Amino acid sequence: MADDASVPDVPAGEDGGLGADEVLSAPPVVFPGQAASHESAYRVAHDLLSRRAPAEALAVLEPALESEPENVGLRSLRAWAFLIRAQLRRAEEELREIVEQVPDDVWARHALGRSLERQSRYADALPHLRLAAAMSGDPEHETAVLRVERRQAELGERSFDDLH
Image (cartoon, rainbow, N blue to C red; front, side, top):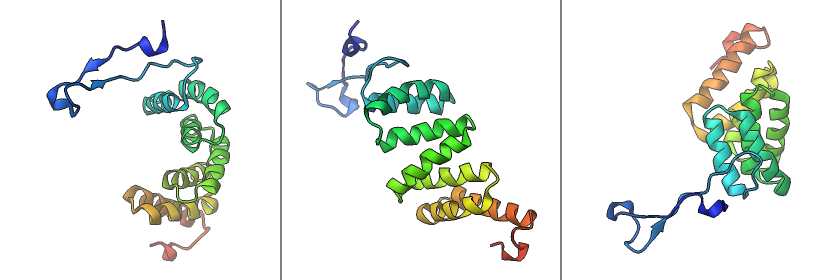
């Protein structure tokens, strides 16, 4: 069975946003070990990770990364898979490289901070978490900063008086 023939084309309805003569095509289904483009690998891996299936996502990502090792999107998904699997050092290595390559990547910056936090490396985590919070304004990112600062105070690494 050909990859492009796995899903038939479906004519769009009037409310589908496409003209009457346009056709809406579904992407082909890709399974681990099956050759695919990096775009379909990204979609499939993202779906697998959102379903908490990191091993399966890595099986899809690795072949795509062999052909495109510098693809930041694929590498971000690999880091996410490592985080889900609690492979924190591997996640940290991947995320450090991404942050060096794309310093304004808020997700990678926050994920790097979280990876360091989960390794109890609070002093290393805090700059990344603060920068992600400042760049995004996301309350969850701000909460992560407060959580790490409080943990440092509990461990005697900083004063409770310095907490914001």
